[in-house]
Length: 386
Image (cartoon, rainbow, N blue to C red; front, top):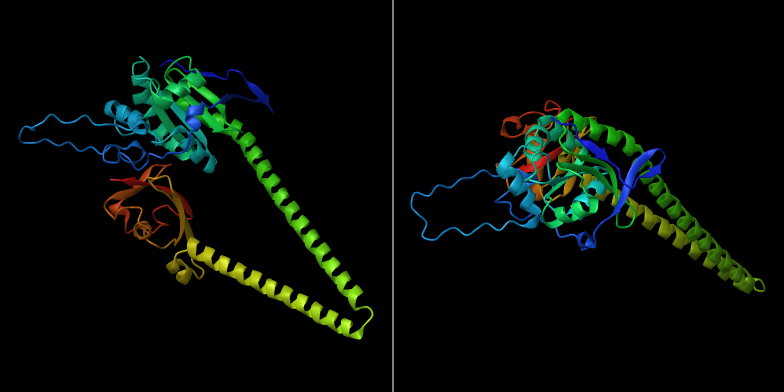
């Protein structure tokens, strides 16, 4: 197999790191209209196709109407028709939505522009993109998004990134304003080992820089918040001092005024105590609410000295929920929790999959404890509809 090439055109150097910035087309910034809940009967979650073939025993009275495929699902539909359902977890949504998911998850995006007519495309898809090692590595470390290079948003991204050859992949990250940071471009066929090596190297080189930028931004927000709190406290102290001086001035010529001053001071102190009590009560209520939301009732009642397991569940609509269980709880407890929030559709309609290493937790694993199933102390699971 030929070795692919990597490009970084129009480079900007920052602490020895090479990347280029591109401006997103305005047509991609028109809003966030999710398509995750559409076309489920055609394509399963993450592009896993529901293979259901209907063979009628009698001729149809009318020719079947052509299936209308929504733009966000066009790539997956075309890809799976030719290469099957074993492939990375591609988000079937708008590009800006996938970019926002990557930003929220603190991950880079793996972008793939699919050109079915290119002679290198079939071998790259079958041997590299659909290989087990590439699928597991991408699912564990990246948010993947793909599109057809000759239509819709894929055509727009092609005009923006200007690939020199196909197959074309890029590692991108959100930047300030409407810009996109292109960290690496991979053009032409590469082997699975070469692709994983490029992805790993880019994560190591670029991850520190982007992590540092996020840390600086977080620290700046903290500093701004501290400054506002100090300003509010100084204003409150100044206001209180002015009030006390005014009371002292008015009551300096009369014992009655002095008495009134004492009573006023007592009222102020009582009000402070009342406000403090209210704040403490609100804080306790908030802590109790947070505790109830983040910990199941049975964990709270049985967790005296027990080991707690944190499970992060990603649902088909892009929603994520983190829940706490005991390490001795069964895998079935996770299914009961999903059914309780009404996002799974009932046991038997879905299964749970870990990304890296890829492992299915279905009916056969229901009786395993979370610790024996390898999910303790923390694990991340995808919910895949059946």
